[in-house]
Length: 176
Image (cartoon, rainbow, N blue to C red; front, side, top):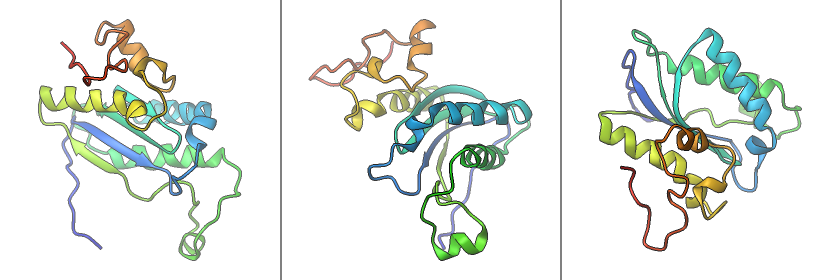
């Protein structure tokens, strides 16, 4: 097993990528978007966090979140979000012998990618990455056309223009 270290920064802001176990051709997250939203909302009641940017794609999600001052326990939040979502899905997924032995579902990858945000430029780059992801994966040609994203909330707040990353051949215009 690799020897890696998680960045535990009380009150920190992180970028996360969380994947389904079987990604190819799997649309579970968007098919059950309301269940995922309820799972996130339920966890936020007991374990608050601030959502700066979030996008849900068919088989994975990305987000940038901050934890309250003095709190660095993002692992519990992800464990509970995955658990709450999984409880609402019928038990039809194939499971390996190891998962069966451990009593685990076969929905989510065990791990996730996290990156501690270092500064404002890092924050902006990761929030932009979150929102451009549906275009990157070919789900839409304009960010504004993807419904499962905080992009729309940030447009309303004046953070992004509605036509940000709107299919320009020259690339993505950075936020101002």
